Image 1 (cartoon, one colour):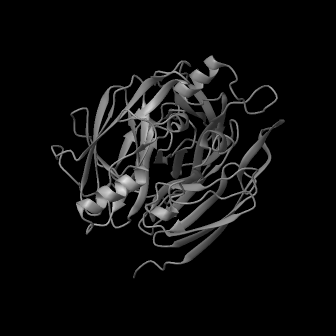
Image 2 (cartoon, one colour; image 1 turned 135 degrees about the vertical axis):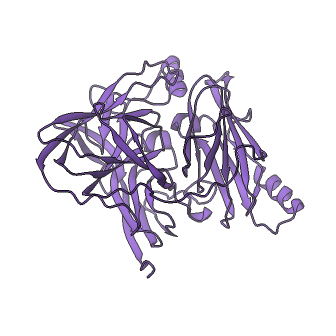
Image 3 (cartoon, one colour; image 1 turned 120 degrees about the vertical axis):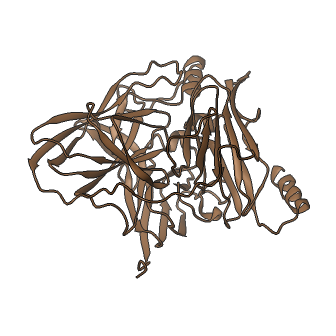
Length: 442
């Protein structure tokens, strides 16, 4: 019997409100439904989501549905929709085709709006999901606040350069909009913990006091097999799902991020984000099979490259530095055709890391610095280390329109490290494609 698909409706109101991130510590947040993160949107594979967004902010906004394979007109970027003006309502409507951990966030004036709290989780379930004793969502974030708990704006040239170079990383560390929250789990039980890195620029190396955990899923849903690790890098925009537990009654440990050197001016540190308290023992019904699903490879490691995308950093007289795609800022890249397999070589010639995010499509990494990856996964965000080359394979299915790829360090995106490109119907001629590309560039 097939899943009974349904229409699921949500209302999201974007506004400014007071938000307590810790006892006695209140900020003027921007967010959805007066909470940070915004309302968690839940659906089942095949459902139609109808999300009515009311903008009660003092400036325009729009929402990108990060990781969802939806029609281009619903992607929530400035090339596919008009910004939702103050006082206006916009209705997003789309079918969710894949199970997994996704999220939504502002895609306008992002360096301000996401920083202030304009994001939330979007979870798509499937009846074939593994069975757990419970489930938790952890949205990782940080905020840059002054002593009065107001958001800072760098006024001088040097602090502006540092923030443009590093991305905006703050010392107020948040899980689900709270500083050092307490997380409760029963001893003897195994839960699905869904981690979403919603920060502007923070690289988060998940660590549970050295305890082993199993990675069961990434951006595009379940892996083929669980992977047992003691730490896992989650870059801005990325998600991982883990099987956490079973733990021993009475123990306490930290959810922390180990230091990660991504070549920033600010020195990386090991930092604590939350405290886990393990309560009384309860019996478990959790069952995580060794085979989670089958992922068919899209291409072999030696597949012929169809496009080269180079990320780099160059000098700028006005701003100190620009963040570049193929030696230019805010690029219009060439179109791709529906049904034609894409093999992209994405290189990072800079001396710092960049998380590369492709809107609207999942890709497979088929090679990193000359080596095949250890396991197959569906991804929409991948970290590019300094002076590295990654080959990705992806298939433009029948969702023509304008799409985007960019660095998911929000400040790098704003500083130029992004590109739009068209996905074009399979039956268009080359002349049509050239004409559309020229029109788009103007």
